[in-house]
Length: 99
Image 1: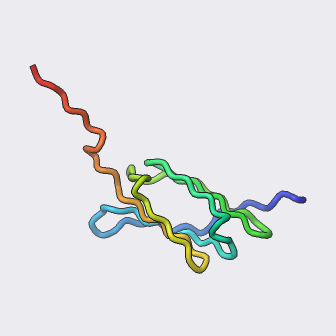
Image 2: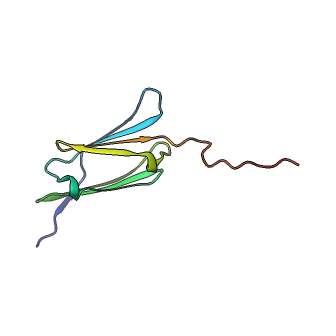
Image 3: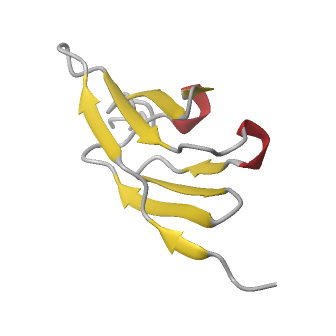
């Protein structure tokens, strides 16, 4: 079997008006939901989504860290929509004792 042609899907990413969430809309026409592989770090995302003739692949970095464990993804009519809240800048803060 011949290797599928890899191509980048159309991606639109934007923040909400309060700059609390990052939304990514990724066009994946003809892809089955169960074939989508999506991995997210706090600073980037990786996607692989094969269909019969091509494989959509992309990886990109975010403008600001997100909370990947709180991200939500929905796939409908060839459009994958991912919503991820931006990470609280104080989330990993460590209290320092003062002597």
